[in-house]
Length: 273
Image (cartoon, rainbow, N blue to C red; front, side, top):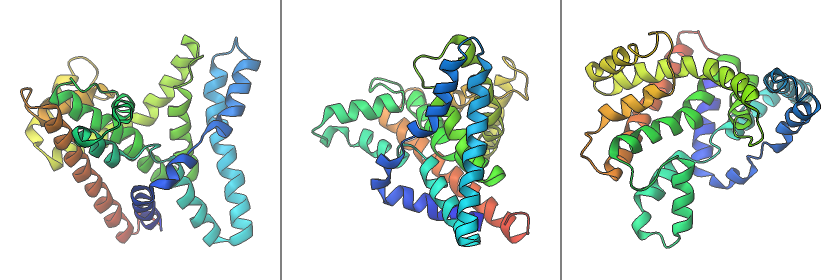
């Protein structure tokens, strides 16, 4: 059932773009922010509340839907949570907007999309490809991995951690606690992204990237900076901004298909329900 929920969620999120404005996480952030302000001298409170809110909300919602509708209620809730935590913006649409910027009459919208992807229109091809990888980590692969591994609380925890780090009034200590949580959540996802990038692209180059990053960090400690290195080998440095977007977008789609194939095999083998 997990693979069916994932497939349905990805399709609905891609085609039913009207759901985007419903992805409002302020109600989930309210207890986190309230607790932070109540205990400003305890920076670990933000970390603890993000974890606690994710588990508590998931448990309460699951209990309510299961008691009301049984297994159907759980499946419906899981689908809603998966769609809710994806994004919050559609990666395909953002890439298409940037590639079609010459025909779009609203430069403000194009600029907003570029800022959301942490890009400027003067960036190089490796930088634009890396930006697609970073967006895919946050919008697709992180949610997919933790939803499959931990279910509803995993998806909420990953998205809430990302949202919490965007708060403007975080102290350095609070940022440190939340950044460590994000690093823990991102590490297995990054490892699988590197492996799938090698299988979907040039394995020798990706393996070289892995070895090069090991000169700066321990081989087991992957950080999102590895995606910048992958972006640098996906396209040549003298390619254009659009070439980087296209190459990065094609690569993450191949990686996503590979992940879905692996999940399907796990389902057939009985390792996934």
